Image 1 (tube, rainbow, N blue to C red):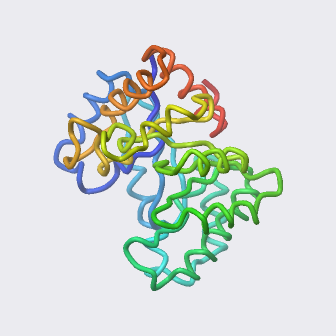
Image 2: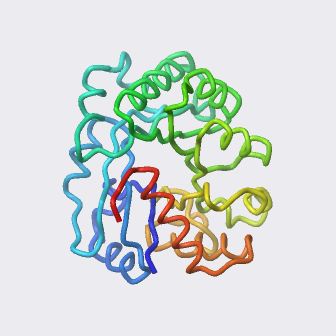
Length: 256
């Protein structure tokens, strides 16, 4: 069985002291592919330090919406150059975040459009962060969609209708730890949406699944998310692993 974590910030300082043990547990949990979204320019250098003989790491390039204010105006030429590199498989993470601050809403929206343009130019999927900004996010994706834009709504927490709209817009749904929370309602929504449009993610070190909610997340916990998804859809863990890994590798154009 092969599991794939499509969204993991393993390069952050949260893992500095015990990275080797974290990776060992990942292998034991059958996690063989880990995708690394960027949050700023520094992320790209930090990612290069990650390696393991039994895990393949995949890089992305982008500016997180919460980082937009720190780097504005974004160097579009530099972003295009980074996203165009052969070893960068995705554009992001980008998106909108109105939770922490609404001081840079217009800049976040401009950044999102910029990332969408680069995703279409490079032919790479876009990875979308969304917090308290669903309508604006999906409206901008609809505006930018010309039939070539692909990507994922990372950490999907929307309603069934919002999920269906995202799918109609050509997006996939990133299923993470929140789907295991009993009081979040995400589990009931996820149970109604098609598994062949879902990919698994931890967002480590954030949003650890039950029973580790509130603690540091790590890639090995993807197995808990997969097991919960299997129960929600009445299929086996092995089927979830096969479906979501195949979908992820196809989305990011990775040869198995």
